[in-house]
Image (cartoon, rainbow, N blue to C red; front, side):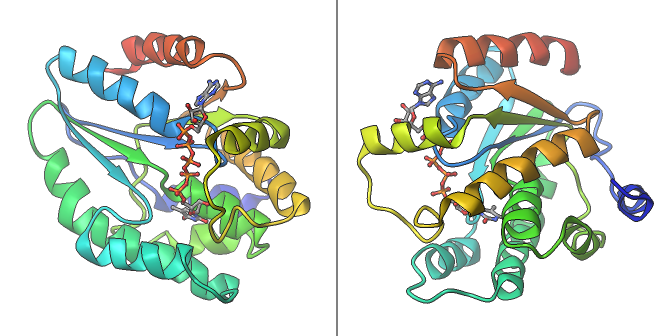
Length: 224
Ligand code: T5A
């Protein structure tokens, strides 16, 4: 990790809203993000929070159109084009949904993928560079970081097994080769080291219940 990357961290901020909370879930395909989000929604609602769950890319009318354009693209996009499409979706999501909802008292925004996906997928696996992606995010509103990020860490083998079980058609990224995925996993692990105060890396090869228990215990410590 060089100094320039460390310096770029100073352009980033977390929301200063005493009663609301911003959580993101990250990991490769099949890591169990959707599964854990359902659990998180339940326990946060039981605790009396208003919860808004969103996904990236998407979450707004404009963002859903971009999602379709990226994930259903029949031709390979230039990594920089790909990256800017994710950023466009994110900026609109922040403006329309995330920032207004965080002003609601006792609210939690749960996001299925956020900035760490771009750092790992476009920065590392597509080789744009972590520094480049951090530079692209350093301006408002993209410089807003979650209070907490759960990185569900699984191996490529586990990801393949879970996807085979599910038997879905492969999308744009799921057809990528092994090298892309091992860089991707490295990218996520690098992000967990770069942002240790925000990202909790969880071994997600265990049962969904065991993963949920780790998240529950952490939430007890970090929620106000
Ligand atoms: N992308 C996104 C970028 O490249 N850059 C960006 O900036 C952003 C924001 C989005 C794609 O876009 C890329 C990344 C992605 O390739 P998507 O359709 O939203 O695509 O895909 P994913 O987010 O990857 O969704 P998945 O459904 O594949 O993964 P999940 O949500 O992590 O996994 P989940 O919970 O659906 O579980 C998968 C299966 O595993 C089982 C579940 O029952 C399910 O069948 N499972 C477990 N099995 C055993 N043990 C556990 N602990 C399990 N947890 C779940």
